Length: 242
Ligand code: URA
Image 1: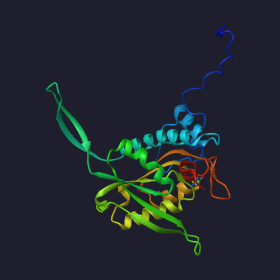
Image 2 (image 1 turned 135 degrees about the vertical axis):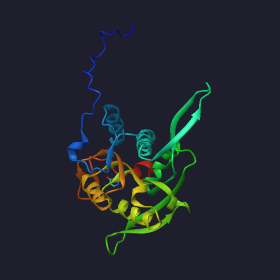
Image 3 (image 1 turned 135 degrees about the horizontal axis):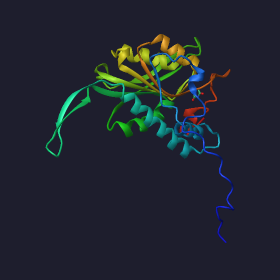
Image 4 (image 1 turned 60 degrees about the vertical axis):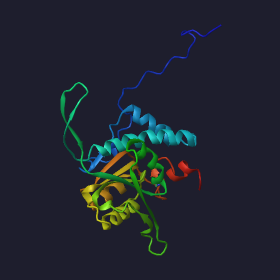
């Protein structure tokens, strides 16, 4: 006998389309250079999946990639455009716009590398540089270990990729290095999945004209500098290595 609706467990009442948790509670007012994704229930559902410790690696990659694509699209909204007139197949003229300038990505290793696929899905054949920053054991300060950038990076807009902004130390060092290669602060856009208010504040104070696109601002940091509630170590969950 098949189950009827009368047999089915009652559905929980649906929640509104707005997210249940409002990340502005953790940083209000937001610095003017910070842009968050619209805090919808759908976005929160994606974050709920990737935050869960029960989520498999495959699902973690799939759902974090969905958020990364939204973040990259939002980042592209901040690039300048110029007037562009085209003709449509109907013979009509359309006065539209086109992107001005070239872009490249720079991923902060190793977690940022997991964002490269999402960037490539949105920007086909985009050039991507890499930067490795680690804590100097003598000074406890972030230290540059490796960088490789497109040779014409100085003439490009840079999408800087790092999923987790904790204290902000690596991201600030990365921006410093990119600027030393001739890219002005205003031409760098930082793309980030989860930010801690402490790191975000330090980053925006240091680079006030660099735009930050983040999906969610969490409560803060624990004593090991992990973001709370966070999602754990993004690199470990992406690459399944310790
Ligand atoms: N990097 C991570 O991967 N997770 C954190 O919570 C903080 C930094």
